[in-house]
Length: 116
Length: 113
Image (tube, rainbow over all chains, first blue to last red; front, side, top):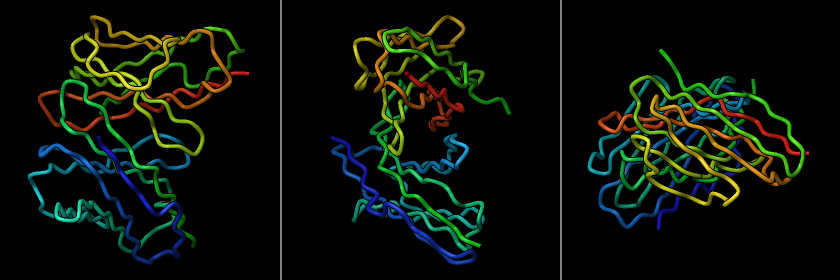
């Protein structure tokens, strides 16, 4: 069975602080895909990144970076120099296969509040 | 770039009524997904379609049905609405040949009174 755990329910930081959102997953498949989505107060779900299980290379995109470690089944997300606009709910999600309509299993989400 | 279109954006219905939500995927995307998100909860998968055939099914109530049409748009039909059906309903689409991420529409907020 697939499961995604985001242990941090809510995080509050002051602008310009760095913040890391934790994500731990469970799956029996050897091939799987991990995702991060952002849900701002307006409600839409915005895709941020996809990582394949066979590619453990970390990725950086501007102020965002992701650390994928298969050994600990973790896929953590770091925002550097946080900004008020980063305030949102962030979801980590898992898919055991892609294509042909396979579902995303989401974690409970982490509410990030960035204060000015 | 074109995004997933959902209509209506807001819908208010009374208990026991019927609702139909529509989804227009990103052009060329061949797979459509439906998710339900209750207040303060994560999105829960309902059902998906690939090339107009049901592909995967989650915890979708028997009162709900969905289909994908020849133009790839999809409709979620909900009957005998209950108060607990009040939620944000998302449609997402993806391309089977890649990239594989699901792109979500803005959602339909359904309120059942």
